[in-house]
Length: 115
Image 1 (cartoon, rainbow, N blue to C red):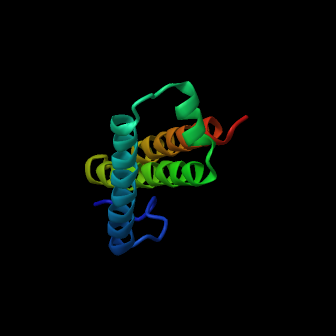
Image 2: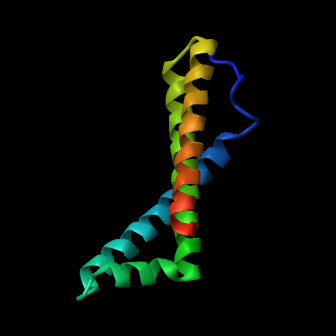
């Protein structure tokens, strides 16, 4: 039986909502990027750089990065709690996932918002 050691007080409804909202944000971001790539006739570094120089695009990218991190965490938390029964191993795996998620999120923010 899996205990609530790593639950952090979340409910199934909040997990469901995080998964759905983050999936919508990621889908919208993907559709925008694909559309931009398809409909930009002269796509070069200046055009790409100009797009990401816009504050709204940086905020949209940040929202997409946070959505990816949240979506990954909920999904991987569910998988680890379903399939890794020993609490110590599960906590270790989830700690590695949290660390990797955090590193990728900070790295993405640095790429988009960095100098």
